[in-house]
Length: 123
Image (cartoon, rainbow, N blue to C red; front, side, top):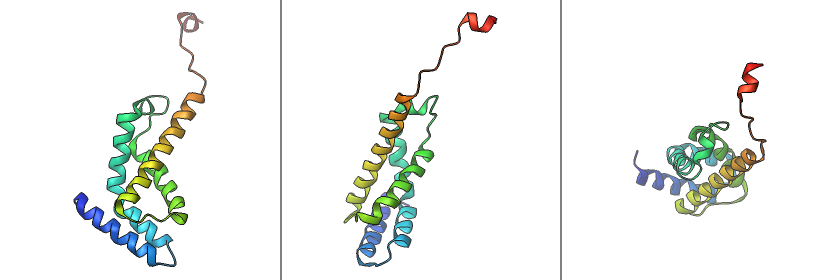
């Protein structure tokens, strides 16, 4: 499925969201339809801008990030309504950045790992 068709489908879901009284099923359908593009955005941002999160001790992969971002978007789209596909993906990118920043902050707050020295190995 091409990116252009995803954009068109997202636009349709957003129009339906503006008219619907119950948004939850539409939001889930929207996210289900956009998941491949969201996965690409997560992978791109993770590996290009936050590569240290992909190494130990975090070992973060794009699918784990995607899960956290989808959860954030489910909550965000209950109150905020995107008006276009561009606005929706901008909102998604903002939540990806927030999630990556939260994970980086947690990593920075962890105490450093102790190095194994020869004295420790002999004991």
